[in-house]
Image: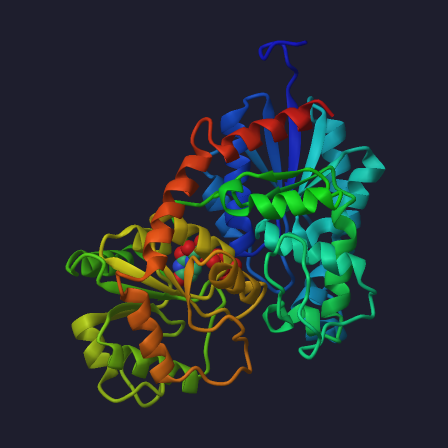
Amino acid sequence: MATDQMRNKAELIFIPSPAVGHLASTLEFAKLITNRDNHLSITVLSIRFPYTPPDTYTTTLLASHPQIKLIDVPQAEPPSQEVQKSPEHYILSYMESLVPHVKATIQNIVSSYPNPVVGLVIDFFCVPMIDVGNELGIPSYLFLTSNVGFLGLMFSIQKRQIEDVFSNSDPELLIPGFSNLVPPRVLPNACFNQDGGYVAYHKLAARFRDTKGIIVNAFSELEQDAIDALSDDHSPPIYAIGPLLNLKGHPSPNLDQAKHDLILNWLDEQPDSSVVFLGFGSRGTFDPSQTREIALGLQRSGVRFLWALRSPPTTDNEEKNLPEGFLELAEGRGMLCEWAPQVEVLAHKAIGGFLSHCGWNSILESFWFGVPILTWPIYAEQQLNAFMMVKEWGLAVELRVDYRKGSALVVAEEIEKGLKHLMDKDNMVHKKVQEMKEKARKAVLSGGSSFISVRKLIDDMISS
Ligand code: UDP
């Protein structure tokens, strides 16, 4: 067997989706691989959706990692109007139209790089690129920025008919990896979408088993039962390599140094574990009537708060539909911002709870810093995440697990009650989250479950 020094260098090509929640962990994974094995170098293909500005996020994140190269994929024609009724349909259609561009880019890499390309590491939405790998004789690995529970849902979808769109009146579902039956009301929007959303999910799911391995930003201490259930279902090997977080925080045009310092300085002045952070991800917004109920709930709860509210009001309560006196209240025991330095916020000792949209990165960050969550899912697979947090794992306080755009208003009384429950230190959830924090951190340390999983993945990639 070749010793480590004798081994030849090899190249991996990463194809992430251009969204903060997908890019962050994928790029962290690229960095981790190059840190763990200097025989592997990485090229990231940068994809840009139509009508979006250049991706400065990736450039900034990789600036200090010259061993990771970045190549722009040429843009394709925007998908037709018809496709725009479902975000998933739109994204998949666009990815499909990018296949020839990606193929040309990879062919160019293969013919010009000195080292062999041993794998494509592709995002959930990029599975059409598996065909490029097959044509060029390069195995594909799926990088799932969500959890093993979601993978179980995709495996179930693969076994349904493509015309079998879910309905809220369907019976509860048996999904591999779940110990509870799953009510349809916690499935992602796409599952109910008759305008191509469900079909897109079905097409994505159909390709999962065509990969050589599935890399998941999760850890076995949390999801070993689900990993076992899917392995019994003949899944490609699952590598749980998380939690992988961008602990340096996400660059955002809505957060300059002055705003950043204002938030952190304000937190410094608050008592320990006294502040609830309200954060709804990169895309979470509410209409004015729901915003007003949140403000009223905060007012009535008496809890200190930091609220990442998109388009925060500056001068006029009325105009933003905030209750009278709310901004004055915020001056005293609360703060509003547009984009929060979320990782630093959750790391701060003043934070005692997190009212969260349950995006998977946010959940992992909450574990990492031991901050309990009050669940308020909005889009993507967040309802399923919230269900797992509350029902499967008992790791969050329930506000709603099935909220989505168009749901009934979450009224101020409900929010007030939820916040008080969240901030109650005797709530068992606090203890369980602390235990999960220890497990999460241990998993990625040398000898931990995720550390070992990364080594196994690298060995499998190199020996293929
Ligand atoms: N984030 C942040 N500040 C904000 C909102 C989001 O730093 O005001 C970060 C957050 O820390 C997380 C990512 O953006 O790492 C959002 O990913 P997540 O999976 O939680 O949600 P998504 O935006 O994909 O719905």
